[in-house]
Amino acid sequence: MRSVRRLFLVLVLASVTALLPTAPAGAITNGQPDNGRHPYVGLLVFDAVVDGTVQPAWRCSGSLLSPTVVLTAGHCTDGAVRARLWLDENVQTNPEYPLGGATSYEGTPYTNPDFCIGCGPGLPGFATRDVGIVVLSEPVPTSVVSEYAELPAPRYVDTLPRGAAVDLVGYGVQERIRGGGPPVWAGLRVRLFADAQLVSGQFVHSAEFIRVTANPSQGKGGTCFGDSGGPVLSNNGDTVLAVNSYVTNLNCAGVTYSQRVDIPAVLAWINSFLD
Image (cartoon, rainbow, N blue to C red; front, side, top):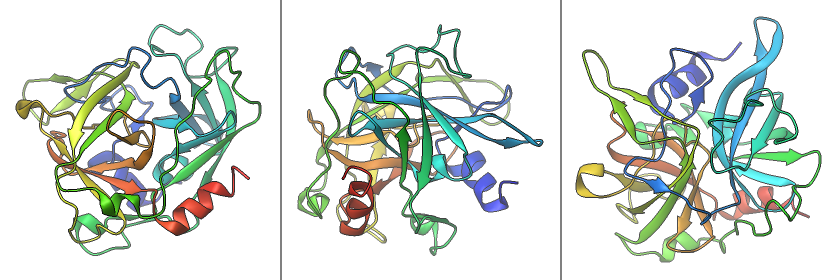
């Protein structure tokens, strides 16, 4: 059974999307079709034990670091027993989704041993070490993906100025269904790309997270439900600065928090799968 803390993360703050008919599904806000810019970013479906059987339970985004290693968020891998990766830019019309087949790659999820939800004080400390890895059972052929996301140098984020441009990549659309009640985001399983900015270089828990703008009204991209685990990339580059962790409101506006991967201990853990 998933814990109360995990349910709180999924339903209120995180940007993971449950594979349930009534769950909100969304993606990069104020984004545009990726058009082949980031072929190493894929859509992940995670299987978990639900009502005594293993079945698709939620989806996230992730980045290939090698033909067999996918970087994603810890709250995506936590509680999962199996994962599948799609690398098509548009998975919406794929009849094999979400159960898998010839167009997907199956793997085993691993969660950072220091991952925890609700362990830190206040909203910025809501999650810690929100990093996960999926190791694929077979390599993705180079005919499908021949370039990969890159890891940063240790503490690289500390060198970036406030307002530094970054790139966001994830699956879904920027469509908000308006009407009575709480905002509902709906979307397709399509890889989108958006420009964004770092809000601040120094804030409480900045040693673990970065804050990224999420204000489409100001022409800035952001992340929303469905983008968990997707990369925050160096501007016009392939270096993963952080993985999308959680949003602070149901409007997916304001700022979003992403777990840094340039922390030496985090880099060492990720590299242990690449050795």
